[in-house]
Amino acid sequence: MDNINDNFTLSDVINGPLLAAAFATEMIGGLITNSLVLILTASHLKTWKQPTTIFLSNMLLNNLVIGICIIPFAIITAAVGEWIFGRTEKEKETVCQVVGCIFTFTILTATESLVLLSFDRFFFITKSFQYNKYMTVNKALVIVSLSWALAVFLSILPFLGFGVHEFLSGVGLCVAGWNGQTAYAIVSFLVLCIFIGSIIVTSIWTLCFTRKHIKKTAIRTSIGAERSNHTQERKVIGVFGMLIIVHLLCYAPIISFGLVESFINVLTPTAYAVAVFILFLLITLIPLVQSFFRSDIRTAIVKGSMTVIAFTKRCRTTPHQISTVEMIRPSTPITSSSSI
Image 1: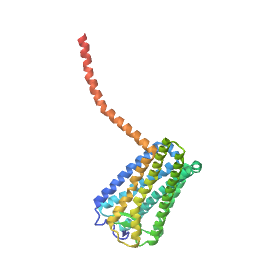
Image 2: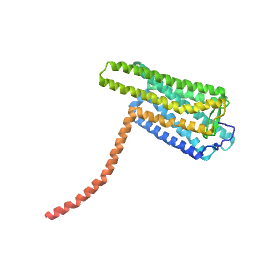
Image 3: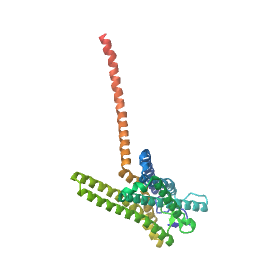
Image 4: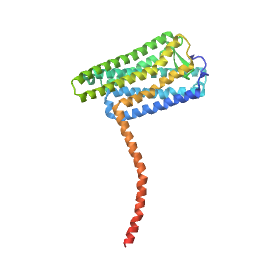
């Protein structure tokens, strides 16, 4: 990880065009999937009355910010081979700092959005009778706004003298630097541990509560209802399991590399390129997970697919019907004339 005051060139060991193509694929996939899920969510006005929809949409909006405001810088730098945003070194440093701030902000909001969603589902399942009374859409919007404000404060700490921004030569992107910034690295690690730890604790707690409730209910129900409960149990396991797995897998490389780099500089640019590529997979995997487990999205996708299939069949059958009509029309005057 190179300091921001060094050169702004991509590492020689990195295949720039290949890296640019990989990031472009992630960006396109993320923009398509997040936009599609947001559009399908917006088309169901009733779902906006649910606080959970606010938290889910917050995740999708943050993914779009990453795809629009962050990844294009990495694509252009990887394709060109250097950081071209700015005519002078001072301008390049300024743009680098701004991009690094936005990058930190998006990572924090992505993590916070999952934290909020985990707490929302925790209270919805464990305190279902009090949930609708205390959790409203307006309160959800206030909570999301506060989470964004916290992310803004944490992301501008390098501008206040605590931490620095660095140019990541293996990726072609500016990020918050941990190299030689032990205090900043420890604080960042503690913040992420609090966020990720709360996600894991609330998810496991909710899962255990749900399993216990289902088992109690299954004892008092018939075999058919018990099977239905087992299906519900598998769905709950799938929701929380996939959310935990996706975020841990995407965060693990970059966090572990950053911690190692804060104490000793032994990692190669290729390692960072792979870590950031895995991190950016998050913007595509999250909407896919939502579309799989959200019934409203699945229903909209099924209806849309059926409409497209019906339209395609109609287009295919129309030429055949036209040709059939044309074959029948000439025979009518011939028959009538022969009868006369």
